[in-house]
Length: 443
Ligand code: SF4
Image (cartoon, rainbow, N blue to C red; front, side, top):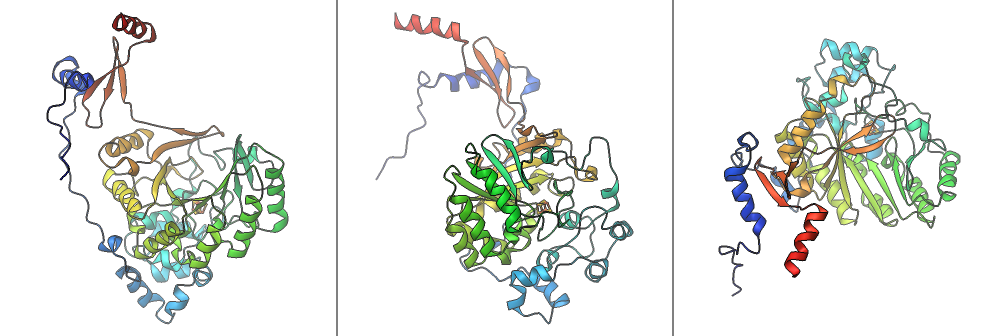
């Protein structure tokens, strides 16, 4: 039998900094910096299908919705992504049939057409609460009158993407990578979309001539090694178009890999067919960033879609937008992140909501975002913690934000705050002092 690694008699001489940590906690540091560790929390209960090989077809909520609103539709049609696209809910009448709308929602829908379009797949609609206007998923899909209010600092193109566009739909902001907006259609339209100025307008068509313009720019720009396909949602293109576009990109010698940003696995998981996965896997290395918002999205259908993609060898990451009243609490966000890991999706970015026009009701303060990260970092698996970023207005790129961990120096020691709020010392002599000590030891 192998001996269990001994930890009880750890020699202090080998690990002096651990000894120092204890001393620092006991005496040296200002008491105000020492925050008592929180009580350990029990993990949130998961739906059991996350761990089962055989998944249920749907959640009870979706089955009930289908019975109520699409009783005559066969399972075959419901599970066909073309049917889901054709039958998206786009009008006030159809919404009224499925939801109890508030006056504010009805009024906003009356103005629909001036700003962001509205469309929701029947599948995603099944996850919305018909009675509760404050249900997180419903808030992200149904317009409210605040969408029409502009507050200081907001803009239609806060990231300045249009200023860095050498070809229609191509954004070249970082030297070695480009964002390629393949078209402007999405399966469903999020009310906080950064590209609300573009999506659903029909101006960015996935026609060959326009895509060729983008490809030609990438071909003649050898410093581009990474292409991110986004939109609109690239996975609403047909398999054939995706195959062609990915093939053209893979044939460019300096393009090392391609990424796809998509919300389709979440709002229309029926699109993730075995044929699509076969098509995508022809073009490895190909990475997928999936847009998630809330734990309620992690249904059997989405688990199945992510399993298919992961089994097809596609590395999966996630991106989320921090949204007030939707996912801005530690328990909700932690639950979402844990569910992603269970689906083999690595949490990647958490975005501070961009100051697009009409987004004030969705935006938290940055301090609230930092507090959220502080509530995650160290309190859960490191893989579960996304990088919290602000996409700098005006085109400065993504700027990562971290709660303050370096508190300052005390002589040769760096003072660091741990996840539990305790203060620790790390021996970090300044260059000159460190060199002198090394000489002394060598003598
Ligand atoms: S899926 Fe993405 S591009 Fe489409 S509306 Fe939502 S955030 Fe915007």
